[in-house]
Length: 153
Length: 125
Image 1 (cartoon, each protein chain N blue to C red):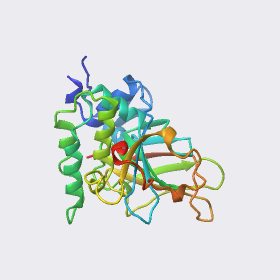
Image 2 (spheres, rainbow over the protein chains, first blue to last red; image 1 turned 120 degrees about the vertical axis):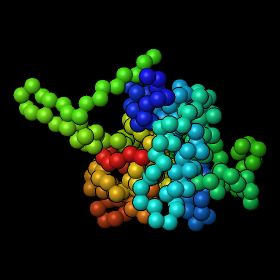
Image 3 (cartoon, chains in turn purple, brown; image 1 turned 30 degrees about the vertical axis):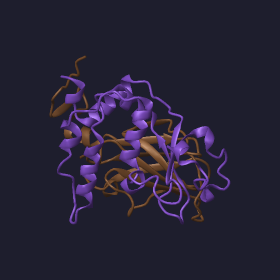
Image 4 (tube, rainbow over the protein chains, first blue to last red; image 1 turned 180 degrees about the vertical axis):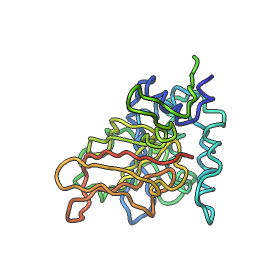
């Protein structure tokens, strides 16, 4: 039996036992609401190892399909979970490709699809050293309106 | 590389009886994480988590890799916080089958950052 033939959860368990976790220094800062502080997405090290190994994670469209199902009126339980387990998994990704995948998986569509529309970027990929080093004013964090959108990309 | 599978409906102990593997599968934690760094910039240990999102003080999303069969808060979880008098809770309205909305408070109800640990048992999609 090949890895890709296993249920996704079994693939994750195999990965936890066999792959070295990868602590990425990348962070994704985004704003979803002007009245709320900026949010910071932090990749999970075991998930990063899965993404970079390949053959484990389903394509990101699978998550979007399940999200559509869940938002449908009357949703009670997923009936298309097989998409997670039976869709051909993603090939190995570079660290940067994995972050792009994670953005499309875990950040709302309306943020990453239009990240650079409006008065300032709504989303920025940075290194963790570029974030404030203390959380004293955490609820006042915002993306700098003067940030260069080419740098932000 | 081959990935083996043993198919069995029951497991028998030499002296303590038999248990259906259905209970073993149902009783296994399907999601867990440990985030000992209160800044949230490091997930130290985890299973079935793709990432965390720091929404502000004491306010976090944890996204899962293998969705739950229905909303994660339809099932049971346990969570603990580091330090004194902190409370770990899950926001019901904003928890889905793929995202846990975790909040940490002190005993007066004020949002606080602290180390946090959680596990979840339930059905997967």
